[in-house]
Each structure stands twice: as C-alpha cells, then as structure tokens.
Image (tube, rainbow, N blue to C red; front, side, top):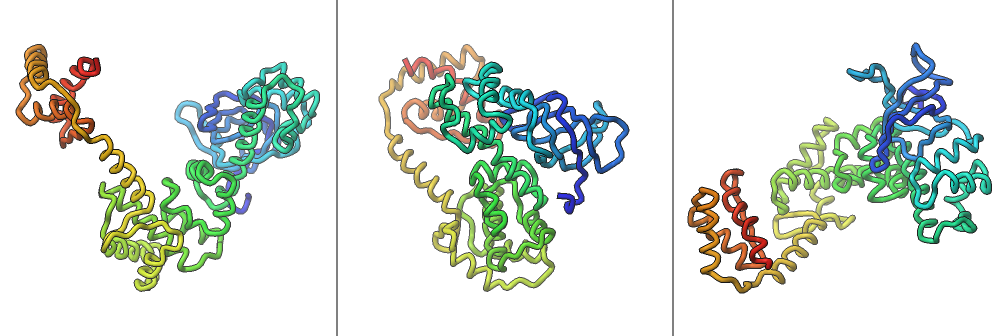
Length: 375
C-alpha cells in the first residue's frame, strides 16, 4: 500500500466513538503503535468506511491527515487491514457484539469464543456448521454467517479499489452489484464498470489505469468510454433515446481529451456496433442502454394493463371541486379541473408542469378528494 504515497497509522482500536452499520462509517479512537508522519499525541481519531472493525484489535490504516474545524486533526482512512491475528478473546467478543448480529448478545458471544477460540469469525465464515449447538435457529445462523462474510469481502474490495485510487463509495457500489467478483473485474478490465457503477467516471478509470499501469486493449478502453458517455447523455438529457452520431462524436472527444491522441473514429463506431457485452439497444439511428429499453418495455406494458376508465360520478366530482374552491379560497382553471377529474376517472394519470405553483392547485384537491373516492 505504501506505493500509493498514502500515510498510515498502526494501532489498537481504543474506542468506537460513532458507527453507522448501514454504510459502515466509523469514528474511532486509536492508540498509536506506529505512524508514518509526525503526530504529537499517543492516540488519534480516525474516520472512514471501516467494515468489520472492532474495539481491542490492532489494524493498519491507510489514508490522509485532515483538520476538522471543530475537532482538530484527524486521520481519514481510505482503507485498512488487520495488523496481526487477534489474540485477545475479549476483543473478539466485543467484535461479535458490536456487529449487532441476530441472536448474539454478550453472553452468547462469550460462549462462541469459548468454544471456537480467537479465530471464531473465520470459523463461522468457513464452516456453516460452526454455530450448531448454540441456541440460534438455522435462519439466524445463516444471516450471521452472511453478515460476517460481507464484512470481510467488502474490506477486501475496498483494499483492492484503493490500490487503483478509486473512492470508497464507488467501491461499495461495485461490491453491492458484483460482490467479491468486483476485484476480478477490476484487475481484468476496470473500464467494464463504466455505465454500470454510477459513481465512476471515464477520466477516473483512465487515470487509475495509467497510475497502476494495468494492461487493457484499446477496444476495452473505447467500449468503456462509449458506455459512460451514453449513460451520462441519457441522465443529462432526460431522454432515454439518443442519437447514435452524437454518442460517437462525444466519445471521440472524451477519448481525445483524456489521452491527447488522435482517435480512430471508425474503431469507435465498430466498438459501438459490435456491442459485445450486449450493453446497448439500437433503434434506427438512435441508441439507448439495454437496461433502459427493458425498463421502458416493462413500464409501458404495465401502463397498458392499468389504463382503463373506471366508474365515477361526474356531478359528484364537479360538486366536490366547487366545495374545495370555496373552502380553500382558490379558483381552478379549466385545465386544472380536467386534471383533477382525470385522476379519478382513469387508473393512470400523468400531471406535469414546469413550475411548482402551477402544479400545486391540482395536487391539493387531489389529496382532498382521495379518501372520498377510495371509500
């Protein structure tokens, strides 16, 4: 890890000050045993995404020194790894309890460590039968094993992605999609993630490949640029169908901007048309992603099934609108009245507007009438 020019801290976790198990964000106090930079005290506050961390264990943290406006100097960890095998049973008990695992309180955690030893976590992960004999039902045993496995795997992914100078948030997104396979994809072709992992840009991956000197083909690089450009154009335009020519032109610009080299435009078009990964969906001279095409097909199919008229009392609707206008001291124009009526005469209604104040007069009576028509 030192080749990344990251600073590091080695130390025992003295206290977990704050933790969020949902996103694995921790704030901890660490007793320093080794440090790669000047620091005036024997302990340090460390923050970061630190899955599977436990009090009483010793880790090596990689990252950077930062200054918090209120709390002063802190170490922002990009990743971490155990500095040694756990040898303190109390620390392992604390770890099991801290993970809020189903069916494991302090007493059960102590019994597990008494039976399985200081390597209890590895035993649980590697042996599905290791928790047999404890008063934990099979469903909970499976959940415990899955959660501990996820901690270990996520930390492995964070460690691998940090070597490519890729952010923790992007690494977590990649793990959530691909699991531990994210490491194999990263080592084989990082450009594969583009268009699939939202927090990654083409320039980030391009820079990572240059820094790590990973070998990828020109076609893989172009394919990654195509996917990223298309996904960005779709998100920014609000339209899922974009002109193929614009995708090619913007991709050529992105490739040239990042490398400074002249790009073979025919090769770009060939990579798009080959569509080896079945990422794109073509419609005439336009293109979208296969995911968007599938979503649109499913949505349109469901709308067709839903879109039929339902019985409603026209006079009752008109009367309720009048009552609402009087009570709310508000006058709806003919368009707004028709929008309110349509919402209760059809199973599917789409109400649009460019400004909030134009939409609000329609939504307020809709909310007012909804309980009446449900009953």
